[in-house]
Amino acid sequence: MGDKITSDALKTFFRRDLFAEFVGIELLDAEGGRAKARLRLKDHHRNSIGLIQGGAIFTLADLAFAAAVHSRGQIAVAIHCSISYLKAAKGDLILAEADEVSCGPKIAVYTVRITDTSGEVISLFEGMAYRKKESWKL
Amino acid sequence: MGDKITSDALKTFFRRDLFAEFVGIELLDAEGGRAKARLRLKDHHRNSIGLIQGGAIFTLADLAFAAAVHSRGQIAVAIHCSISYLKAAKGDLILAEADEVSCGPKIAVYTVRITDTSGEVISLFEGMAYRKKESWKL
Amino acid sequence: MGDKITSDALKTFFRRDLFAEFVGIELLDAEGGRAKARLRLKDHHRNSIGLIQGGAIFTLADLAFAAAVHSRGQIAVAIHCSISYLKAAKGDLILAEADEVSCGPKIAVYTVRITDTSGEVISLFEGMAYRKKESWKL
Amino acid sequence: MGDKITSDALKTFFRRDLFAEFVGIELLDAEGGRAKARLRLKDHHRNSIGLIQGGAIFTLADLAFAAAVHSRGQIAVAIHCSISYLKAAKGDLILAEADEVSCGPKIAVYTVRITDTSGEVISLFEGMAYRKKESWKL
Image (cartoon, rainbow over all chains, first blue to last red; front, side, top):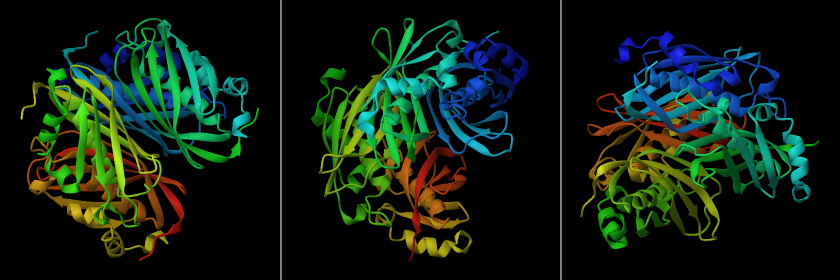
């Protein structure tokens, strides 16, 4: 089934992710174990010292990770995620690109690079998911 | 200076965390390397399969971690965070409790347990911060 | 079955862990989701700047984690581990104590505190295991 | 100074890493923020169920990470490492390749892919180091 899942179907599915919608995250593309998502930065994404809040960056990366693993067909739940914060973001948007490291029948692992408008990697995310037997459906 | 920082001062400081405010996180208490924060769960905290979104849980834990490390006086930035998702949350609020593992002059480490209304640990977070020389101020 | 597994049976089982034996790790105790292991420090545990090598500390913590999860009966394989290095070890032995955070039918999580002879926490380890259906046997 | 450090100088420096030597790890190459290390697998690298022990894989990855960060000149200590175990290794050697994600004045981050003789990624490692002011010397 995996190879029939389109980016459009995944975008429709993840529009139901109410928290990602609330935060303002846009899923740009998801197919074949990869995904891209974007966040246009607003004041409400900032923390107490004026930087982009770590939770906003994490949520963006997490959505790209979720879309990438769901492009493989089965419902999956995150079991472990980590994020390294490397630099402060410059500019008014950040982009997350998820790549598949490994996708087994039960466990799948993805890395996500988050870049700012200058193209620099500002954070590195890794997500591990547990894949259920059922496929997701629209 | 560390021992003079009150929970009230930290609450005022973290009210400037616009993303935590936007998400609906309340800092309950922060002092002496520990902190507690709470999130009352709403529909907009849910993901595409109806569970509390991982980014919302992470953001709650991250705020408790940030408050705990700032209770030591110096400005600190998160450099690495990880989260294990153990169970789905039951009930309508989740609570994060941060404890200090180690607070050196430059690097500090905290663990955060996130529990639901049944008292079960639903997620375990660990945060590492880099402490700057300057103290934060209101 | 979990409640019948003795610390002695686990010690016998882990004596087959040839790498832990090679490194010099002793399993002291394992029962009911908890375990303790010890490493007497020798010159061959040191790194290029004379400190205890991170891999030696990791291997000690990993054995305590493995023993703790196997005290629950099923064969388990580590899927994700992380370690924070907090201080240099003082004295001539280090001790690892594993505690269970969560033990589900498939996924289990343990934290391990590694202390030196002064009693200080020098490292904090977290391990996530995937539990197979089969029980281990002597 | 970074660009003058040769792979030969790093190999000499890491021959002082007594634990890596004891485990049987060979540093093959290290320069410009990258490094490669190899472990020829022996019986004493196996765990209680006959697989390559996680601590042996970690120690190999950790040495590649350490060599990569020391190729930048300053003494560095690991502060946080994580490893995902993806598959069992096939064949009689494993190879670790470290790449630089970010190297700031204080904090540097590397990812390490560990492959077996079939070329498959068996584990993914990430290491974060704190860089001291002093350069290392032979």
